[in-house]
Every structure is written in structure tokens, then in C-alpha cells.
Image (cartoon, rainbow, N blue to C red; front, side, top):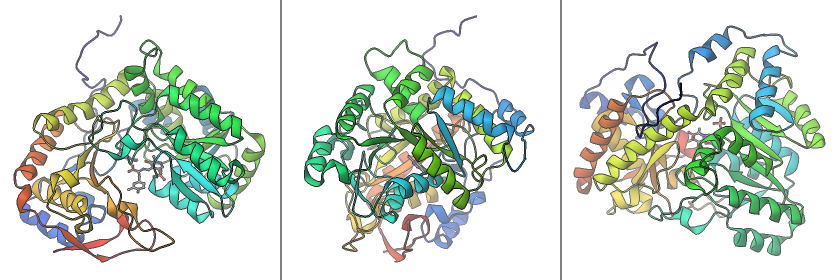
Length: 461
Ligand code: P61
């Protein structure tokens, strides 16, 4: 029987195992927040009611995946599960060669070290924290070539993740194509608000790069979500399957890095996938040094099996429709209340526009960090700062980067929370919104050297 066509995104699964949540009082949360230095990364998970910190490694696995865990072949070399994963990556992403890694940044490390030489430039459609850091550690310089609309929370563009070919061309003219080992294309773009890239843009980027001998490397972490937006927003794809769209997208690239902790529905895992034999050979050699043997890359056999099965589930139409439908549901409710959020609503999260939410705070008073702390205090909901703290400092000048986007991310794990949790989230944001004028900012009192947002500490001004 065919699935009935409904407007509702209702969950295409039912709940078999539950994990109790702890309810906390405002007093408890005030204490926890102070102990955590107003940094939601430093909260204990047991003090959190609804955890919207991240969708990374926090999704619920299916019974099919858990059953696969029992079939883990924990041989040191040549595990059966490695071959299952290889087959899944070849089938759904279409790349020839697979190097498993413990998570996404393991793959970023390897590809950066292989392809980037000191003094080279790596264009990308907006930075991602770990990706840019690995590029810099390898001696490269990241250059943002995303379209301008991506930096404007209110700009309505169906594919705000698109690469601006003029910006890319300007870089090529300035430094020369031989100084650009590859372009990173994030599908979707996390820091822009989970915004997708159109198929037309991916094709253009491919054609341009082919002409100039520049490799195209995707950050495929949420490529399935990107495929959903192509299906629903781009002309000509409404009747194409998510699986076919994903494969077509990947056909316009040479390689991808992947954090399996997102689209692929696992708690841990990632990979590098490539088409070039020489680069693969080197990657397979490097993975042995940093991650583990090339047939496990830091993962247990059972982890690889769960990821292989997760990939298979990730492209199912009902799954991806409900996944993004849930995020859209929250977005529509917040928009109806007049809460400033990044539009259009992206794939994995709602991003509150903290500059518009708390216009009386200067960016150096950390509006997004402040708002994330207030939301936790109000409701026990944990979110993530994506603004000046995340952006870090310019390596050369030592100054803060002042990103245009100063956002708080409410990130939805896949298959975890119910519609009632979504409603509570909307109510909590509305309550903070109602008292926004009385909210004071923060000052940073401890700043780590790398990826400071994870461990920085703050105090109330
Ligand atoms: C996240 F605060 N994302 O969104 P790994 N590429 C992309 C990602 O979204 C990503 C990675 C590569 C996380 C976890 C996280 O600044 C942060 O498997 C588009 O986490 O190594 C991860 O994949 C890296 C949170 C990462 C952060 C870095 O929540």
C-alpha cells in the first residue's frame, strides 16, 4: 500500500525504549549555569531538560541499527562491517574509495594534511570551526566564498549556502589556481543556519574548478538534508528520489569528508571518501598513524555496521521529511510570535538571531552566549552559541573575528524529541523574548587557545 500523502510531518517511527529526563528548578539551573561559567558546553547533561546543543551523535538509532551492533566483527583487520560500510558509501554517495575515521574532524585532518601546502588558499562556502582549524594547522588560509545573502539572517534565498562564483574567480585571479589545492563545499552550511546549496550551483562550481584544475571536496556531513531541499525547492527534482539526488550531488565532487554523527544516525563515526587512487593511498597510509588501521579508522566493527545501516535509513523519504518537518514546525511557530530567526529555516536547527533579539548588547558583550545562557536558565533547554565566541580570533592579528551572524542554535537530534518537546521549546523562547530588554551581557574570563567556545568561561557584566 502506498503511504498516504499528508501535510503533517508526523514521525515515521514509534518509541520502543525511553530515556527519562530530569526536571530541574530555576535555583538548580542558576547554580549549574554559574558553575559552567555561562557556557552551555560546560553544563552536565544531567542538568539539562531538552538538549538542543547539537544534532551530532545525539540521534536515536533504530532497532535495525541496534541489531547490526550485535553483528559487529571486531577483528583487528578486514572486519566484515568495514566492507558493509564501504558498500553503503559506494552505493549512496558514489565515491570509489573509503577511509573510515573516528568522526568528521579525523577526515578533515587527513585530507588537509595531504592536500594543503603552507602558503596555499582554501576557499569554502563559509567556515566551519574544525574544518578551518585543520586547514590552518596544515598551513593553508581559508577564504569565504559564500554568497552575501548567507551573512544576512533575514535574507530570503532558497539556497543561501551557494558558492559565489565571482568571489571564487576573484581569488583565483588574485593568487593563481595553482595556490588553491581544493575548494570545500559544505552541503548544507552549518554556520549559515543549515542552509543548502542548489544542484545548479554544485554543477557550476564543478565546471569552474575543472577548468582551473581545482579539486572539489564536499563536507557531506548533512548532504542528505541538502538533498531534501533540492527536492523540495529546486525545479526539476520534485519527483527524483533523495537517494538519486544525493548521488548526483556527489558526482560533482572529487571527495568528501563526513561526520557520520549527523545524517548517518550514529553516535560516533565518520569517513573520508574519494575517487582518486593516489590521494586514497596516502590517506589510507595516514589513517594508520592517527586513527587506526585502514579497515577500522578508530571505530569498532559494530560502529561501522551501525553507520552502514544508518546511511541506508538516512535517505528514506519518510525519515528525511519528518526530520526537516520537525525543525520547520518549530520555525513556523517562532516566526508567528515575531521571534527573530534565520530564514529560511534550515535543515538541522533553528538559529535565533541574537543581534536582533538583544539589540541593546554590543557584540563584545556576547549576545548569543548570553541568550543561550538565559534560555537554559528559563527552561533547562540547552542550545549553542554560534557567533563571536565560535568565530575565534584572527591568527595573524590576534583580534576577535566579528562575524555578521551572531546566532543561538537550537539543534534537533534526529528521532529524539516529540512535538510536545517542540512546543515547550517555543514557549521557553517566547518567555525569554518577553523579558529580553532586561537581559545583561557577559564578559569572557577564561579563553582556551583552540576552539575556544568549547571551554571558555564567562561572568555576568
Ligand atoms: C555540530 F560546536 N558539527 O554541528 P565531528 N563539518 C560540519 C559539522 O557540523 C561538524 C564537523 C564537520 C558539530 C559538532 C561540533 O564547533 C563545533 O564529527 C558541517 O564533530 O568531528 C560537526 O565533525 C565535524 C560542534 C563540532 C561544535 C565543532 O554540533
